[in-house]
Image (cartoon, rainbow, N blue to C red):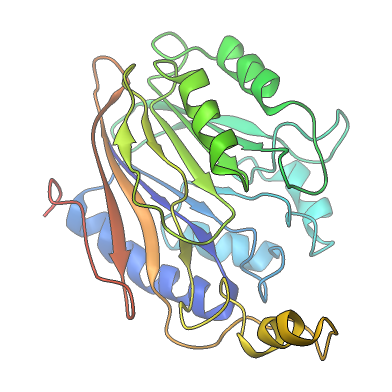
Length: 274
């Protein structure tokens, strides 16, 4: 199975780049399943129902989120009725929406996608992500109810991300880190067969501070006083994500490589898809 994960869409620039490029990527690379993190898609803070639907229309099978999931209050209303919209599974019981789902890929494979948030340096501090992962994997084990398992681990600390990857190694097809908006160079297949990267990066303007116009955050670092609001950077976006080949027999990863398309960062596509 060919799976593509795209990192956090940031603002109009990021979401537009994804909407424009994703249909071609799906066709050119014959992708079976696509996941996009959309938690910063609305001006850099949260996601609206219209943006969610446009992302599905572009070809995404699932949209994941993170700590900014409720920044647009309308998400509280549409999350419960949209099966392909995920918020972190370790929110307290009774939180609107769902933290995981079982979906059917284009090749007929059953794909469990879980969205889980870390706790180190994160706000709000949610329930234990390791126990949340254990619950998800026990309810829908790889090789039994699921042919592939993907976890979007939305977290800050690389130590927590790496330990989480080792914790589910051999029980998930892919653990992909999100949240920091900077693509890391540690993509690998762990000893048990789980594909892993600490952060997929963002889909946004990299002439920025994490996708935000750089003037306001720079001013705050220098003066410690807010001058205005954070605004999403409007320049041309680079799409960052990860391509993974998953065995139809075992559900574990066979190949992994980053995907980067756009200005500023060196462009690359998985060579096994070229």
